Length: 305
Image (cartoon, rainbow, N blue to C red; front, side, top):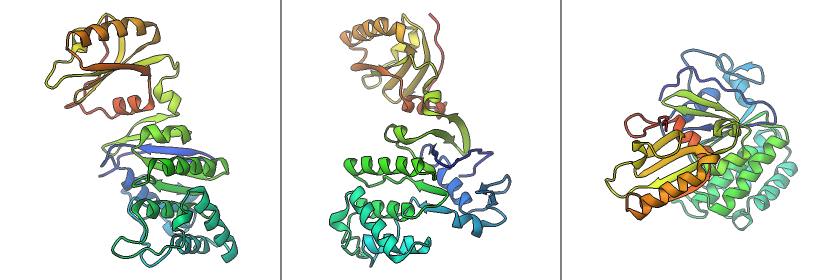
């Protein structure tokens, strides 16, 4: 995936989300920041250092958790975290203390001294992923890049990881969080950039992308197989956005129209034209889907009463 004029900034103390579908260009951008890929144009600066002209110096200011699993075979999680800390200039005792503390914070104490084996045994994929996160976060650096950090991680430990991501930002690090898990990551992000086909198609704070007024509602219709979208026939209320994804139709509407929308959806369900519906406040996922809408499979438009 080639990126085209992507602009973003990660400030100290800020968690910036980089969102996008698989193949949107997220990992390509990360590889350019850390010097693994050279961009054909533009500039990348890390703590004032030109990362294209001087990738080695810039890389020393960045800790990366790559999308691929870290090569832990033959190591215990504790050994791997300690090695990462030592490579970042920590003393042996400080890196050991940090490894113990992070094992408790991520709830992997049970496996901290268990050795990973080449056949994938010893520790699970989720524990390997959490170990790789701890390796990136163990030592203070100006910029931490996390590329899909929660892959293979169970729900309880994902929550612990997200809390640690927020703490890293609160303690002064800049964090670039690459994810497609919009709903879970929303509460830790200060700003976000949405990529689609290598282009930045939306950016801003979560509240800005959801809608600054915060009074929009989200009506989701579940359609029967091969059913026509009833919202295409102009329902009895105005909606500001429509997104169709398969058998799901998402309508964004004003809070003042909620009662009318519920009555309309209830009648549709009674007649069998929809299987069900929900009405909730607009989410960041709705804004994300709208920003990355594919013209061939997802339809977005404004309706008029």
